[in-house]
Image (cartoon, rainbow, N blue to C red):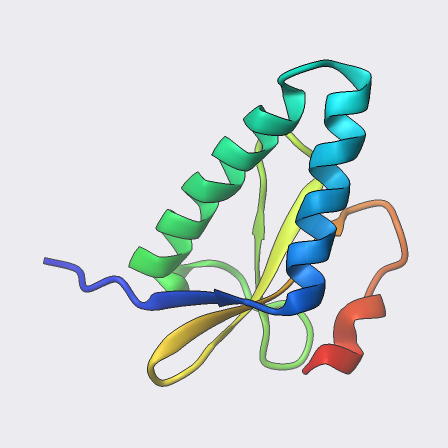
Length: 100
């Protein structure tokens, strides 16, 4: 049985989630909820097997969402997974590095 690690979000990652949900809901009611559902699924997959997703920048790893053009950037810590950023794949690459 795989033991899932606890997942914590950087405060700026939480802000990014809220902004994305607001943006998607403004375009199509309910699309923000779909974004959250996919993000929650990604969180569960990452928590269950954090090592299988590719390394990204520095010590981070990255999970690409399937339906939305966003990446989940995270660090594997001893006791937890730290989600550093929820970043749009086509905007400002690596702006989040200062969070490490």
